[in-house]
Amino acid sequence: MTQPITDHAAFLGEARQAVETLNRIKKDYSQLELEEKQLDKQLDGERKAVDDLVSLTVKKRREEVNSSYDKQIAKGQERLKRAKAKREKAKNQGMKDRIMEETASLREENRQMALKLKSLFQAERVPSFCRRSWYYALYMPRTLKEIGILLLVILVCFAAVPWGAYLLIPAQDRHSWMLIFIYLADILLLGGVYFTLGNHTKMGNPEVIRQGREIRNVIHSNKKKIRAVTKAIRRDRNEAIYNLEKFDDEISRTNQELAELTAKKQEALNTFDTVTQTIISDEIIRSSKDKIDQLTQSHERMEERLKDLGQQVQEKSLELTEKYEIYVGKEFMQPEKLAELARLIRSGEAANITEAISLYKIGK
Image 1 (cartoon, rainbow, N blue to C red):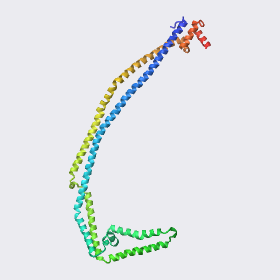
Image 2 (cartoon, one colour):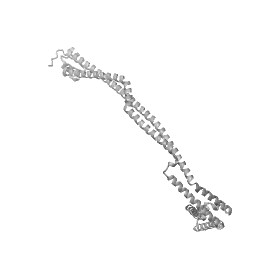
Image 3 (cartoon, rainbow, N blue to C red):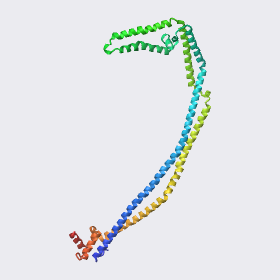
C-alpha cells in the first residue's frame, strides 16, 4: 500500500540516489557488455584460427601423402612407357628382319634384272635414259603409274605450256588466233621432239626396248609381291616369332607394381581420412585447449555477471517506476532535476513536489 510522503525533500533525495545507482549499474552493464563482445570475438577468433590450422595442416599432409605415391606411380608409368617402346621397337625390327628374309629372293631377282637391263642396253649401245621409268612411261606404258605419268606430261606439254605462253602476252595484245598459233607451234615443236626421240630410240632398237619392257615388268611384278608380303607381315597378329616374351614379362611386372602402388595409395588415403586426420586434429586442438578453455571460462563468468547486472537494472528500473516515478513523473527522473526540486522545497519556495515541479517549469 502506498504511504503518504511526509518529507518531500528527503523523498526527492532518495529518488536521486536511486537514479544515480541505476545509472551507475547501467554504465557498468554497458561496459561489461562491450567487454563481453570483445571477449566473444577473441574466443571466436581463437577457435577459427584452430579450425584454419587444422584444415591447412590436414590438407597439406594429405597432399604430401598423395604426392609421394603419385611420384612413385609416375616413375612406374615411365618404366611402363619405356618397356612398351622397347617392345614395339623390337617387334618392328623383327618384322623388318622377317620382311627382308621372306623377300630376299625377290629383291635379289630384281637386282639381277636391273643388272641384266643395264648390261643389255650397254651391249647394244642404246642410250641409258631409254631404260628409265619416264622413257617407258612415254613410249611403252603398262602400269597405272606409267600411264599417269604419260597423261601428266600430255597435260603439261599440250595444255599448260601453250596456255601459260598465251597468258604471258599483255592482255590488250591478245587475240584468239594467237592462242591457236601457240597451240600449233607447241604441237609441232614438242610433238616433233617426242616423235623424233621415239623414232631414234624405239624404232632403232625395237628388240632391246621390248626386252627392257619385259625386264621392267618382272621388276614391277616382284615389287608388287614384296609390297604384298610386307603388308601381310605387318597385318599378322602372331607375335610369337619375334621373341617378345622378356618385354611382355617386364610390362606385366610393371603393370602389377602400378596396380599395387595404386591400391597402397588408396589405402593410405583412406587411413589418413579415417585415422591420421583425427590424430592431427586432436593434437592441434589439444595444444590450444588451455587458452580456449581459459577464454571460455572468462566468457561464461562475464555472461553470468552480465546477467546479474541486467537483473539489477530491471529491478532498479521497476523500483524507480513504482516508488518514485509515479510521484515525480518520468520527465524529472534525472539527478540534476531531482536536486533542483529538492532545493525548491528546502528553500521554502515550494511546499510539496507538485508545487516544486510547477515552479521548475515556470523558471525554466
